[in-house]
Image (cartoon, rainbow, N blue to C red; front, top):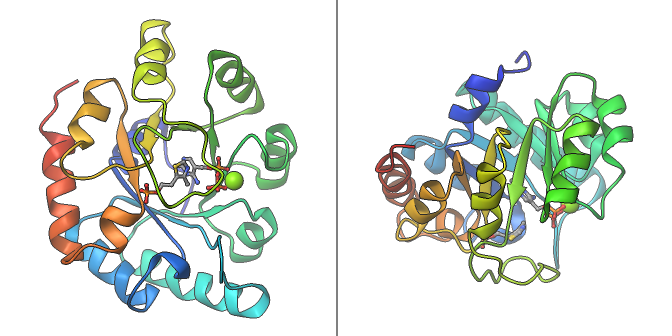
Length: 220
Ligand SMILES: Cc1ncc(COP(=O)(O)OP(=O)(O)O)c(N)n1
Ligand SMILES: Cc1ncsc1CCOP(=O)(O)O
Ligand SMILES: [Mg+2]
């Protein structure tokens, strides 16, 4: 898939599902299929945390998930692992402030999508200069998924960025559910990125449908 335009990227970020094997109670390929059936708009492979796959097993799962995304025209991004993203020819990568330097990553990945986690205006301006295509901002709400997550920051940072004229596509992350997703969009985000509220939902397709309703209920 060619790099998508900024306009298409904002659409692709609407309901951005992130997952790895440790987030799933059924096989990750089945979780992804059901999430796609519900209508997710982008996917990030984040194989991280206690019991995460490594080496060949990680590569094999990534490949399987990428094929499902390709079959369904869903952009497939890789979290942290630039080498894996390049080996798979993924559509993009997501990195945070503790990962490889953004400028170096941008050089490695060429015109693939580059998502960067930012928590302040200073980080945002640096990320823009390094060639970010979108920002991930959070944790917006309480999350149990990321052990080393920063303190909950609510939606203030998103609102401040928009008030200061930052037009970069933004997704909120952390503790986002169908019940609170509209708050994130109202603050100025283009979309929501979600792990648990999709991967561990009683009905995965229904969870995605409800998330979409919440996201599209706000007209920015
Ligand atoms: C869309 C999106 N936003 C933020 C993150 C978090 O990235 P990072 O801060 O590098 O933390 P890890 O996910 O690597 O633990 C993300 N992955 N995706
Ligand atoms: C990766 C990440 N970065 C900030 S919070 C978070 C975890 C989000 O997971 P969940 O949607 O289960 O709260
Ligand atoms: Mg990271």
